[in-house]
Length: 140
Image (spheres, rainbow, N blue to C red):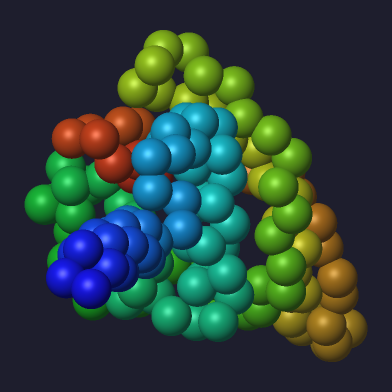
């Protein structure tokens, strides 16, 4: 009977260990391209939601060291524009730590005397891997 309890205890230990490791344990990290896609789309969704403070965290540490979150939020979107959607187009990596992402941004713009007009533009964004994390580096 004691041997049965030992086997039951061992089985329970193995089951708990498997549960503790969680889904995806042992999987290889996502590719740089997939990570940049996820982070770029997340950042644009935050901008669409006017959550500039959260979008600020996606900026490179160097950029953040030169611009406060308040300054970034104040200039993140012209007041006559309303972002409506961002669609992922793709990414090209120059090096293993520097990639150029492309997104299609849809927005409306307030035209004086004409009201709201829809607009669309392709955005090109430089993403850098620093300390294992991908960050957006604005041009300005």
